Image (cartoon, rainbow, N blue to C red; front, side):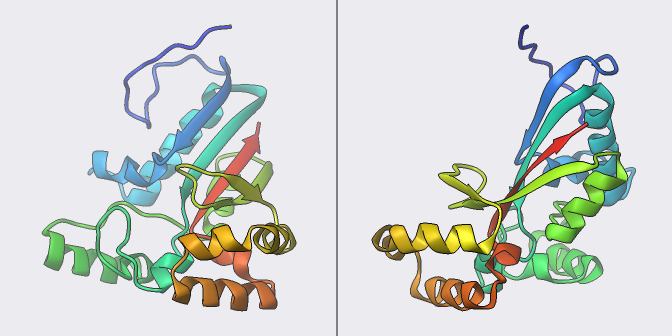
Length: 197
């Protein structure tokens, strides 16, 4: 086994069909639309995911790490990671594009999704077995992964002082509220998905 580093467009990988055991996209999928102006962002992202599916062997694993369009930090007004514009990920794609044109003088093409949106994308390209996790503090430098709110609640109760020290008061209050309602997982700031071919 070996690792082969290649520079290529995500929508056209110079790799043979079913020749890889694993593929990783960590902070990549959201940028695909920036480099393919001829397609819609969604079409471009689907093409990239289809390429990953194509190159994976049967039983191959795909790791996808990315922000949540409806992440708690965005709901509380943090600038969106890719455009630096608060609340833009929560807008319709048309409105987000208009706001980006007005502020950044370019279209909004770094699309992220919510949990359902990611699952739909992955299923659309052929993945049927998908494990979905909330990543804390985020997917870039994750310390822990959670499958559900109960796991998150247990972790936070054991690590309360750590959580309080690194969380803004408003975010901590909302975290507690969402955990009480069993909805925190949906509003995690970022997700990690492990899919199998």
